[in-house]
Length: 146
Image (cartoon, rainbow, N blue to C red; front, side, top):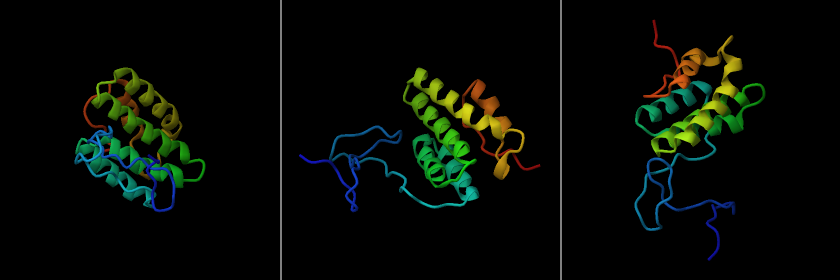
């Protein structure tokens, strides 16, 4: 049996996934994944990712951040990569993998903390860093409007 491929011939796992991105057996109904390679503005990325986090879909939020990361130029690549890592860390926590969650959230923090002095796009870097010290609940990507 060959590998699953997308229409362009790239290897893609076509197995259905659960809401936390875990593969399910072929033929099982899974949760629809985020489409890959979507070009969004930073504001659209933040709104979509926050919506997914609020819905309890950190795996899907990671995919949105990953699109931003892969499409970003330096120096913002590290910001989007860090946000993706935090979302993956949340995914691991939801799956019960506390060690993996901690490691990925720490990697994310290491990527986003340099943006704390001048946070781009209204991202609440300080709030995210505070959340990461004791990750529980859903982090807010932006500070509440005053």
